Image (tube, rainbow, N blue to C red):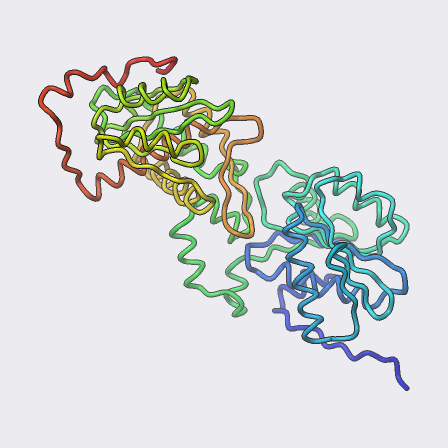
Length: 419
């Protein structure tokens, strides 16, 4: 009776296979989204484990648990369809034990100290630019005794991370290191990605985001979705014209309530930034906004605030934030900035725009301020741009009682701070 297992490698396109199955011990692969890097490395790690011996460990390490779970599920489902009876999954530990006794582990790099101590015979670091540098150090230590091979894969994200530095060493010809760059165009040429989908992404995403996610080109702006040069080019004096649209971001916890007004040309003509009680906040917004159309964050605690503001007014619109709506809102702001449709004075708005970041996830692009910083001004500006653009596309007729415009305070009045 033969114990031989016949294995046929799943199809990989030539450039994908050459990058992942390079003969060097280390291969660093900077790749676009949907270029096949994850699929190819799952195949590679499975083959490493299939050639291993009883009791040997093989690791897949992702930045966070959900990403590790995705890779685990993919391998488990592939084996269920193509090799039933040759593996044993453990959904709790996210391990797959093969018939030869080797164990493939799917781990996260969230806690680097948990990665020390084991002997690992081959490993993959997924989305490496988002894995902590301390976790990379720990993973490298587990390969010391075994001299196991390693594949480092992921989208590029700026230049200030260990994965980018290591990629440059590999690209420069460091001993026993291979380097490859897989782009969306490679995937299109090989028939694994549709050209129409990539062209649509090019139209919808800011240029810097598209370059990183689809062309594997690191941004000079260190992950800033608006573009540092574009932000600077839109700095101008505070307009003295009347407000045409307002955007308000309501305070959450230690954040600020911020209001930004744009005139008809897209220039910032009003700015408010303060921390007050909800009742005071409502009064300030009513007094400052008047009957000018405004979009206001109505997420969570903002919902009842917006409801009160809408009483007796038809020009107040609530905007509920989800991962999808925030992505759309910020991409609209990015387009406005890059096309010079908006201008703003130097100060808090510019500071927050400069610090703003994006992060690619499995479900889309997540936009946020760096940890410990505020993004209230960015959100308020984005809401104002959204409201302004809506009025430009669909002119709004506002019915105003006689004299009301003369009764409200100037939109440039200070309410606990401002320009």
